[in-house]
Length: 597
Image 1 (cartoon, rainbow, N blue to C red):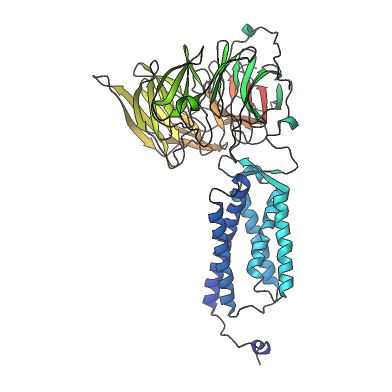
Image 2: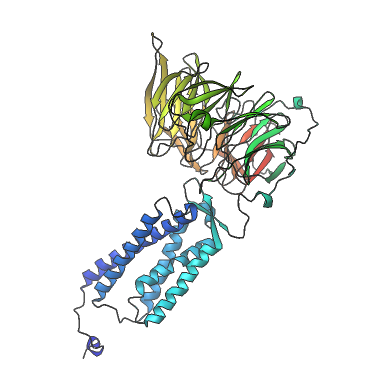
């Protein structure tokens, strides 16, 4: 009498070896699919909550599990298997656990690859394995449910131990232990000189000659002029002149005289803050009751203040444009540019760093009724001109001269647009869109009448040539386009007929003659870079600062050091050999070795 007959059940024909192989391969692929879906459910849930495809991926995981269970039962040729747990079960469990850990390590953010987090995440997958295998293990129903309950508690422990802390540049979740201070808990991370009032700075402003007074420097091209840095960092120890906590923001640091300016979110207040250049001490803070929140990518202001003469101009993420007294932080005027133009903020907030041109301050408001780019009187805040009908993107207005004519260039979600620098009139527009209509990188002028632009999301880069016809009409002709240098929210710099930039987090050099790659090497993540003579100073996404030769022939990193901790997307500033860096948690100043030191 067969074993099947002893169980009081009819005998089944044994599946063929080929059926087992094909079924086993299908189950293996199904396991990978279920694990991947679970990875997406966990990461999206932690980073954004149950949005952005969360429910679709959860449904895919459930369907995958159901198919695996049905296939397993079919292969066993009976409603439930009488196979006894043995080495095969342990082997499957071990392989499943290793696969789950590999998913998190390979596909997760480098910021969250610590052994405890990887191990905890792998344990969260066990309940999925058990839901599949519990139908094949000859245990009593109560025992099966009991094991499932224990595994669900283990999975719950993972979510109880960690919390989402935003995403990295690849939109992968960053995690923090739940007992750690939250990024927006300013009171737990307060920097030096926490008073809100004005603190007098006794030193003369005239003693400082090198500034970096706005986003990407005085010319807006990411160039630190006159900086002669030492080329050899080997054996050097880099200690911060000062380093302290700051409020959340993706604003960069503007350096002017003996002061450093930035924007921060402190609780419910959107702040423009002034620090002493030498010590990092807070000198004053200007507050607006406003808060911009964006799960995953972070809260707070995005734009960088612009310092011009005795004034500081700053645009908050909610659309408040401030003109402040540079010395005291006193508010001189402010305008809500969204209300003024009838515009709507894009999903990641207002990011336009102000451009000061003589007596006006220019910002991208994104009003679609001839109020895309707007200029306000720098003294009164009165609107002087407005033009264009493109919605706001994630770039700042840039003054360039093309074909001998000063123009303000702005990259909108779908176009490259040039405005007359005096009247704001739209001179020309050229299509420049991508899969998500998300342009974040600043363009760069090349020669007398050409403009280089780059983007991510399947676009790459292009070189345009602008010209004016006999009748005065302008035309922008594309000279070439290439899928190289897909910058995301970094911007390229230009030197010697080459462009240097971060192509999806990897440093790349391309020829401006045709867009072809010269080299691509050096993983810095979605950080930022600036040009100092023939050297690139790179602020990497992981907080490192690296020095790389701007050499089209080869990639050569000359040194690096850890400047900050955590995700660093903010643009650095370099003035007088002093490097100013910040992220959404802290800011620091380092003195870099100069040529001859």
